[in-house]
Amino acid sequence: ETGVTQTPRHLVMGMTNKKSLKCEQHLGHNAMYWYKQSAKKPLELMFVYSLEERVENNSVPSRFSPECPNSSHLFLHLHTLQPEDSALYLCASSQELQGLGRGPLHFGNGTRLTVT
Amino acid sequence: SQQGEEDPQALSIQEGENATMNCSYKTSINNLQWYRQNSGRGLVHLILIRSNEREKHSGRLRVTLDTSKKSSSLLITASRAADTASYFCAPGAGGGNKLTFGTGTQLKVEL
Image (cartoon, rainbow over all chains, first blue to last red; front, side):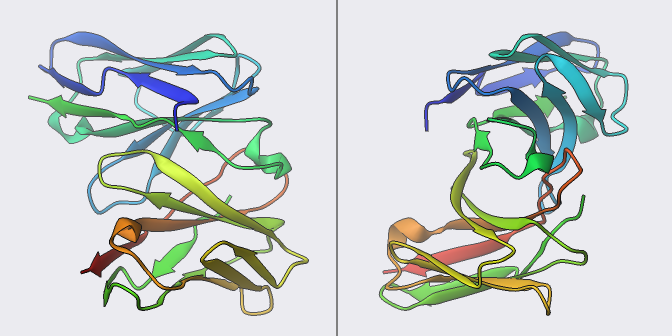
């Protein structure tokens, strides 16, 4: 699956660092999503964008800041993270918002984030 | 939105055997999707079944949906070592923007 590309694949950062995760989709989709996957927990939906507009913010702490400059790119800016934020961060896209039920999510391979 | 709950949490079988995983959900749906995740990778969409469908096939995959019991099952026939992965269901309801996932079923297919 190369339609959704995430960089970097691995990231180690200290609690005082600022870093960004990048996601790019080449599928011409209109909706993009950030999910967090921690060990032995359900995937957590963090943010939803439709046509570059944020339509969902799932009570995510402000140390996570999303940005969607266009329908192909999605960023997650990170600052002053905590060790419990260590997880696999997955980006996904879909043709339309999932609530319309029109087809699947396409996921990237994620960024494995470790906060030390 | 609602989250599906997969059962069992873990399943270990021998190559060539069939693997059955179940999913339960709580409220009405428009469709239900199944995804696979290989270790350290993203989720990959397998199959979508609509609420007016009872069964759907795709290659070695067979999905059933029982809306009266609010449950679905995924059957993988003649399993292979390459089927080793986590499997997630995602109930889709109209009107919301969310597709949420549970903790999945970890399938291990041994040679």
